[in-house]
Amino acid sequence: MNRTIISDTSCFIVLSKIGRLDLLHQLFGTITTTPEIAEEFGEPLPDWVEIVAVKDIQKLKLFETQVDKPFWKR
Image (cartoon, rainbow, N blue to C red; front, side, top):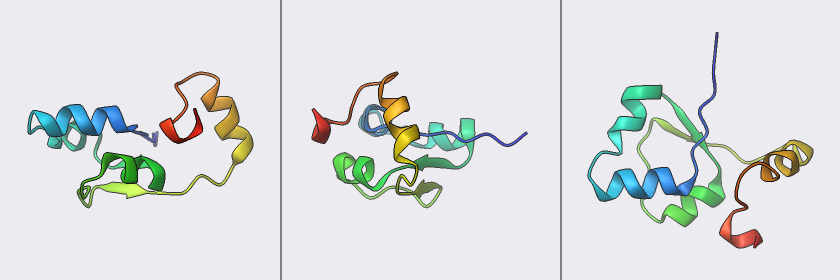
């Protein structure tokens, strides 16, 4: 079964601060994030992080009801 791992900025920030961003790759392989999250992180991301723009706005709105909205939408 394929699974998609989507990361928000907090995962990148916390793991980067302790020098263990590689843990995401070790645990999950490829990670997917959005251009907005990559920009908010503010540092170059490793090549195992795929940056993909959101295409399905309806799914995004549903997802936002379950997790925090990004800072730029608050």
